[in-house]
Image (cartoon, rainbow, N blue to C red):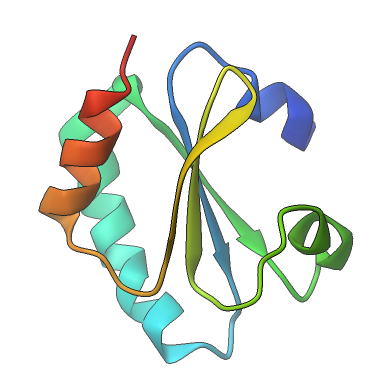
Length: 99
């Protein structure tokens, strides 16, 4: 199993979804993320981080609300968004940071 650091240091952009199981907007984002992954295939890696189970990681990235999405490129956070976002907006943002 890869560590968080290994995952965010991949060549392709990595979208991290900081979520909570009790969060309604987080639940609403799940199909948006799934559709985004299906559209972009291997050009993006998407992972979900449960803030209740990974409090130190959430603190490291100053996650104050969920859902919060962070886009990493070469291990560095390059974009951040809290709240709901559309599939098209996500695709546009991720595509702008590919290679």
